[in-house]
Length: 518
Image (cartoon, rainbow, N blue to C red; front, side, top):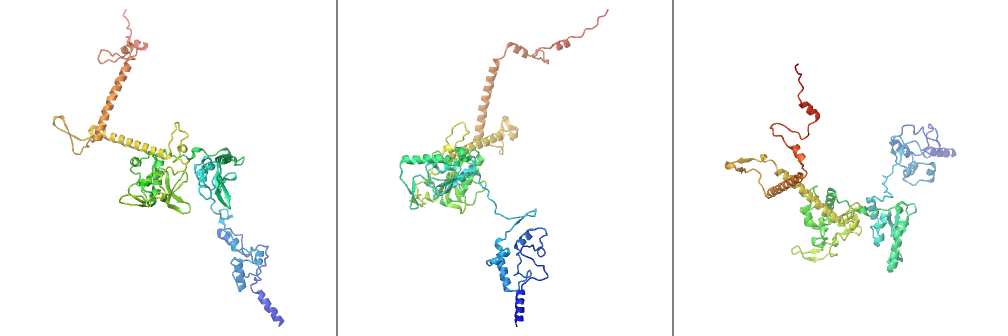
């Protein structure tokens, strides 16, 4: 009976054991005879080698699972169930520690990583885009409240500071941090404005102005040099670039047409003649390239006025296009269009029944004080010889006007070249009395042609007068010797030279001597 029990126990222990024909392996030795690894490495083999588990006593032949205990142990090994201390000791590979590796031509497997993001430069005092990026970190009102002009966000951004948290700035290069608070104090975890004297506030502002530079480390480059004041200047002198960006802003605003204010809700600055600008724009400005379906058939005056003053549609990085808001790409000012549009208007009479929350919209005043669309100093060209106190919208208006003038002059010169062709090219029919009969299909002379002929007559008269003056001036320099040299001979057919004859010429003119007869 005991012998039977011992045989039965031996049978149970032998179930799932490895065949005796295979050489035994230990945990520290390589199983190269079972899983050959001397073949060339491939992407599939690299992944497969990571999926191979170290054989132990609980494993049977490869691919054979004879009992439920083996099946459970397999599930433990692949990570379906939590691994037991026994499995951890054997060093089996589980799904949790499998790393997919990228195949390289050299045969080395490289662990894949996410596409490395290009880090922004830490010191770039001449990069306008980086200045605007740093300025954008001060947008959230929950993290940065408005400050006096001398310690405003633009002053911190020019010296390499970004908003790190609630009223906290950090240098992009030396990583120094600083808390900026003026006239506020924390009470029970909340910031409460504190009434301070003007002298105390001025002292705080003066101290923060010094810290904008001095708060950097001694070897920080932002301490030595910051961004130039003219870095925010907009390049609007080139007509192709200026008109292309204007059309892009106009299209963005036309897509938000239901939320745009009415024309009477706008208060445009003096000197901005919207109708004159519409006439000065190129005829194909609103049609080329083809506009999107959101654009109206006729030009939208409100969208054009906002685009001329630097506004465009707001686009959020997470949400996308915000239909009821606009923003400035330079000062990053956000504008809620619904606040300036009258809520209810009588369509027949145009009378406002329910006014807007705000009285009117001044598109220039809504920009921040340092924005070139509002500040002429920020738009000033440091290389200009003359001081031109023009904001960005005034420069854009002047560019459109100059481009229209040059286009008109070019068209006028082309028309003149077509009209002032030789008379032989115009088909005419002679008639009796020396009169010329113009055919029905000959070009008719309109008012423009008459004006051109009058201009030609006046120009010819001025040319004759100019030549007469030149002759009179030339006569003052004439002398008697000069007139004698230029005098022509009386004998017809002969030529005279104004230069006296040379000795060689005299010898040639004398006939050779003839020998005398003796």
